[in-house]
Figure (cartoon, rainbow, N blue to C red):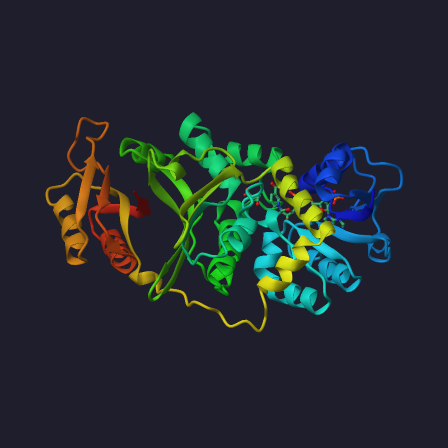
Length: 435
Ligand code: NAP
Ligand code: HSE
């Protein structure tokens, strides 16, 4: 049987999973690729470190040149996180004639145009299925299976770590810090978990999807984003009372005047598919003009789900399928003009959840209602319970307001004005609502 020599650079959570698939299930990959994918080298920073996996003699190395300078190795899974040295290593491997597979969305979101353009100039390819939503084959679906459609919208839970944290806080009452540590132990979180919890990782993935689905050339940092780092257990509790769950939702919506992009903790109505996505699972609802709505659900983080996507890309690259797609679709071309512009975030319409601490005084509720009315925001429901002190006068109590549809601009202005009211203490929590 024909043999393709491959290498892995970075043998951490994902790299180890890929090595397992290649070494323990070589017969399976050979059957599906019509050739053996032979793991010739695995490059790490520190070869003396204890590993979860025993590699055959001579495979583990600290020397990248053992891969770059070996003409027999044609496909390399580049599985180092972060921007540098990942970018330099990827360029060096491309220059050495290797086709690349990567899971590094931060690198693609930041340096995609440079890397893809260089790969194209060199006649090489970059496959990146694992960069978005782990084991869910969303890249192939958007760029190939749905290619006869104009994608109209895309809504998803794209960060497994955040979803894991929110699920455990919601269902078990676990503390934020404890669940972050658990997500790190389970290999879901980025090396710097801030990227997961502050919405950066989801925004980087959304920027990649927006490019594929809408031809948008977006700087991920310009996507309005809020993470789950400020999420209060009280909001999870109130959401439940109102029959919603809070999820970190990434949204891309195409309208006549441009594309809406955002990442934010959002109340999602219980019973809708996105509200039922738990733990490290991801999900994406895509609407295409021909196909209608399609829903994808699967593990978005973790060793084997991510390795599944990387190894499939290695097979596709070895058999020549990646090159075909890569060169016809012109992903992330420096010269390509953006096909859509971003919508002004202030004009976006949606429902809102407000939670604030308000003094138990005559007229305080009326003052808040007046501010909302002034900004054209209609109240859909209100929750105010008596304080623990038997409804004592003047004691601040939490007030939760659900609104009807309003623009982001009016909701923002109303929030600022409410925060300046004398009877309101502390910041107002404002979250988006999706029915
Ligand atoms: P990880 O566990 O931190 O592993 C990173 C690996 O890179 C380590 O083996 C490290 O070597 C190696 N490395 C770092 N710098 C190196 C250098 N200069 N030369 C050679 N090797 C170097 O990371 P991971 O979780 O596997 O993630 C890898 C990539 O996949 C990231 O871009 C991440 O965003 C992405 N991703 C991860 C998941 C997930 O669930 N974990 C899911 C989807 C995508 P040492 O072992 O010697 O330190
Ligand atoms: N840290 C990422 C997550 C890994 O939790 O979703 C998958 O990209």
